[in-house]
Image (cartoon, rainbow, N blue to C red; front, side):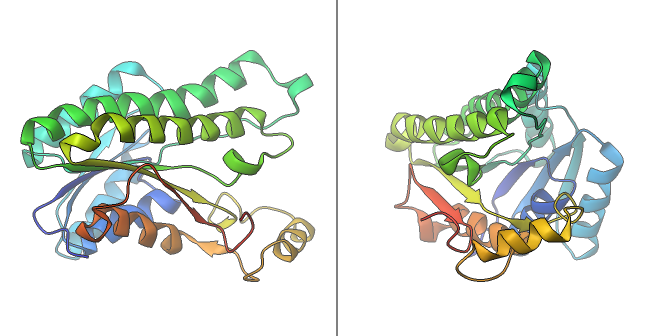
Length: 247
């Protein structure tokens, strides 16, 4: 799955799944621009990639802000001169039952997880189409976008919307050689899930046929495949990486 001479942009690339994706794409040969709200964390990932012989750029950005999508893509173009792969990974949670959910909690999650992905895709498509060499847009969804989850109405709605965006955009740009897909993780071991009570983790394990939680590397491997030439005939699809939790 060689990505030599390709350039990728990974939003939310400073930790967890985003950092694993950035490393995986780099190991496949791509130059990687990554953005996050905390520049120091993003720079740490970029430096680790460069220490292993890769090319990387860290950019501070809040994808929930409309202007930041264009700015991040511009920074990538300024540094690397092209953009071939966009990975919409940036996301936040503001959990709560619907009757207790504040309007701002709903708005913030939709602004980052769905509107941010839309704006980044729109910004990335401009250089992709101008290059006339195709491209890849891959968005990170979630199992809850397909099956729902109590206490996460905002997050589930955003991730379900991301599936609709993926399919609609795939139809729009297929004739230009750009594929658009989503990867929907299930229960993945990251620093965000490490703090869950042991009882919750045990209960969750019983619902996963493969009998283990996923790793960030499991998700990154699916993304890297979709970014490669091996996935050139795959578009408008949702690849579920969840150990069988949702079938």
